[in-house]
Image (cartoon, rainbow, N blue to C red; front, side, top):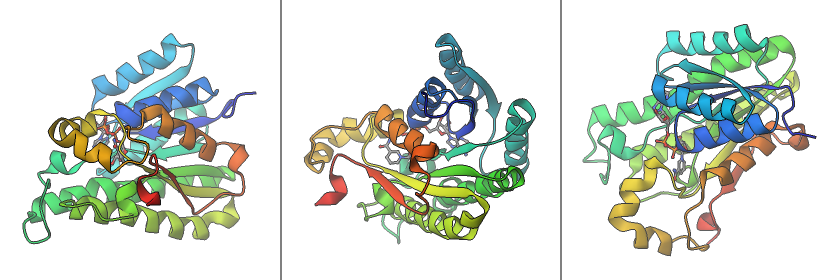
Amino acid sequence: TRLLEGKSALVTGGGSGIGRATSIVMAREGAFITVADLSGPAADETIELIRAAGGEAQAVVADVTKPDEVTAMVAAVVTTYGRLDCAYNNAGVAAVHVGAGGQRVGDISQQAWDRMLAVNLTGVWLCMKHELAAMEGQGGGVIVNTSSIAGLVGLPGSNAYVAAKHGVIGLTRAAAIDHAATGVRVNAVCPGYIETPMVAEAMARRGDQILATVPMRRLGIADDIAEAVVWLCSDRSGFVTGTTLTVDGGYTAG
Ligand code: NAD
């Protein structure tokens, strides 16, 4: 039997990388997918891939930092599929997207700091707020938030990203205990270096250096994360809440 048969799942940042791969694997496991992204064409491409493989999906344009758009995003899930069973809060930006690359605390601009926290931490909180309301109204559900190895350890020149991703783990734990009794599970996934557009620039610049820090000596692939998220969303992880699942080729084991 398929792990997510008949479930309604929402994926933010589903137009690229890990979000796209997870949307596709969730659909293959029987879920109806709402693919949300800043970019409409990117979200559309993901739903075309799902439909081509015989799955069911809709695309929604939503910026996770905009309250009205997040309200409409969750409403679109419930309107089309009747409920929200699984929410994967994956939308995120790297330092390079907000002009916060390679800087230390004293060097990063206030604007870059604010944008990083707005997308990678406050965006998760805002999505959870609406997802939890929908899930509690129907008697349960599962949320998976995207942290990172940067949520577990410091990385050089990445203070805003590291702070935001540590924050996601704290938020996940706090929400998990607050909502456990209502049938909602909340967990986080911590990817290591994964081969997606987000890390392409860093790999081109210092790929050998990065691989030297990964015990498995390779990048992960987006499907490595997708499989972990699907398990966390499935009934097979029914007693798992408030935890982090690290998928990093051994990066944080040393
Ligand atoms: P990606 O850049 O390939 O995809 C991110 C997607 O999120 C894009 O489609 C983008 O349009 C969307 N997005 C960005 N800002 C948004 C916003 N404000 N609202 C809605 N959508 C938005 O990146 P990825 O590598 O697939 O990363 C996905 C998540 O995984 C991110 O949270 C990232 O921090 C995290 N992560 C990635 C890695 C890695 O090595 N790739 C490692 C650890 C954690």
